[in-house]
Length: 214
Image 1 (tube, one colour):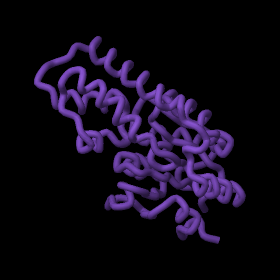
Image 2 (cartoon, one colour; image 1 turned 90 degrees about the vertical axis):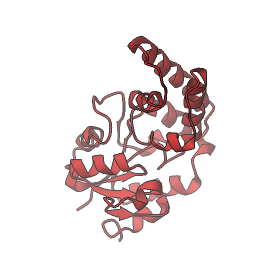
Image 3 (cartoon, helix red, strand yellow; image 1 turned 90 degrees about the horizontal axis):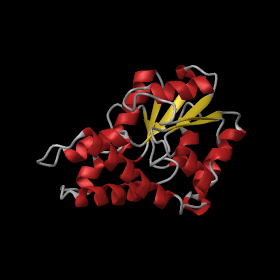
C-alpha cells in the first residue's frame, strides 16, 4: 500500500531549467567552451560538480581544482540570483491542486532533490507548506542515480521505500528510485524512459495511476 510520495523538485513541481542554462552558459562563455541546449540536457538530474565536469569535457584545456571550485561557486551565485526573483506565481495552479488533493487523501509528501538550493526555492514559491519532509543536496553525499536522496526522504517520512512513489523527470532520477526499491513515476523526459514504472503526461495524472486511484 502506497503511503508516501517523494517528488523531485525541478522539472516536476516547477521549472528552473532556463535559469540553470543561463548560469552555466555564462560560465562556459567566459572560458570559450561550447555550450548549448543539447549539452544542457546532459545535466538533468546530476549534481552541480558533475554538471561542471560534463561541461569542461568540451574544453581542450585542463582546469585546476581551485578553478573548478570557483566556477561552480560562481555558477551557483548566478543561479541563485534568478531564484531570488521567483514568486508563488512560478508554480502552476494545477500543481498546487494536486498536492492538496494528495494530502487530502492522507498521503505523506516529501521532496527529494539533489539541489542545495531546495530551501530557497521552496521558500520563494510558497511550496514548503505542502511537504512533511525535505531531502536535498544539503544532507546527502551521493547524487542521483544513487538512491540516497530518496532513501533519506522515505526515512524522514518513517516509511519503507516499498510504501513510496518517486516522481521524476530525469532518467538519473528514475534510476535512483529503482535502485532504492521505489515505484517510479516518470514525467517529461522520464515518461519515455524504458525503466519508468508509470509514465504520466502531466502532474494532474498522478492521482489517477493504479496505485493511487480511489
